[in-house]
Figure 1 (cartoon, rainbow, N blue to C red):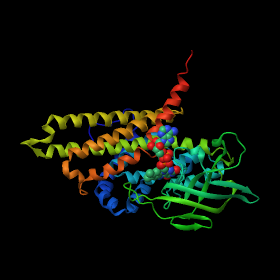
Figure 2 (tube, protein in one colour; figure 1 turned 90 degrees about the vertical axis):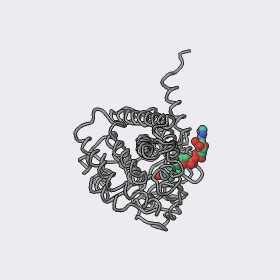
Figure 3 (cartoon, rainbow, N blue to C red; figure 1 turned 45 degrees about the vertical axis):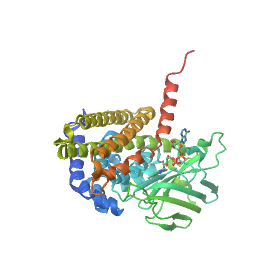
Figure 4 (tube, rainbow, N blue to C red; figure 1 turned 90 degrees about the horizontal axis):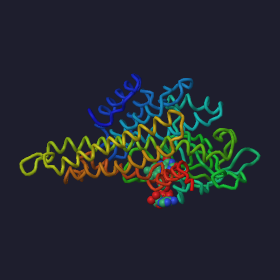
Length: 398
Ligand SMILES: Cc1cc2nc3c(=O)[nH]c(=O)nc-3n(C[C@H](O)[C@H](O)[C@H](O)COP(=O)(O)OP(=O)(O)OC[C@H]3O[C@@H](n4cnc5c(N)ncnc54)[C@H](O)[C@@H]3O)c2cc1C
């Protein structure tokens, strides 16, 4: 992409990382994405390639064997990867969130235990808040951990774990009895180590098979069932119970920038496909790009790609500067995911009947885009976060 979605002020290292990833995406991801997606095949070779490039440790501090890069670098990498195939960005997203939570909130022992192996891609992270009966309303979590003489026992059911089968460390948010008045103060994040795979992977812990999804294939999404699962107190993230909601919200805040970045990547790809196709396809004696109706669609699509990219970069830079970015990340996620759905839809229309054929990439993008309206909080939840933040900052003096 020569012109759109450029980012001013990057360091030489950031430019180098992005150039390497862009080449990897063009050579190793785009040519295989359709086949892997339609076969619902886990992209094992691509994941190995990402391990070799050090992408699993991109944001993990150098002292723990990572590259110590910023959220912005990570988001720009994700944008490129999603331009190739969203499922691949899904493989590293939950890993990145768990690494972030450990880096920010883990005890020194937890950091030492997990971060070096996470940087190497040996330990692979997933996170679990959602349950069959709740997603947006996180504080209503029912899965419960009860303290006994030998640690905690967990019972309950989790839903929608991305990488639930292919990860071996899951950060799980559960209810603990803290006696706090507010429901969210009674939640605790446990670091659950488990083998990869499906079935009863540990006594009292079952990962049923993969959920069959409309898109976002290849990457596994699962349930997680706890039935008298025992876990030591040392596995509480940060060592102190009752802090889980805060920890997870911090993780989700960086996750939102990442979802915005994915939306940007898909929108960029949809635009690339549309502008190429519109210069090849002829109707009524000229290319369809020469019809003003199509040219204007391209102009609107490119404007949306650009606006979404700039908001995503702004949200990432704010977080990197050490400031809270709840409102900006919410805005970036809201705008980028809604624009992504619109840009993808327009690219689909530009393809005419061929857009409906599984031979064309746009068919896959059309199934990917809707997930971004839901993951890491729906558009309605983003609007709730944004408006709450605005009302906090613009309090009436009347
Ligand atoms: C493919 C996939 C992967 C996922 N991966 C993960 C994961 O790795 N880990 C994880 O924990 N979760 C994951 N999720 C779950 C995801 O975060 C939830 O689906 C999402 O938060 C929405 O929750 P819900 O599905 O329960 O919808 P609900 O919360 O039931 O919402 C239903 C509808 O009501 C609206 N709504 C809800 N509350 C309000 C309100 N207060 N005001 C206005 N409208 C409202 C919503 O916007 C939505 O339109 C994944 C989901 C999918 C589909």
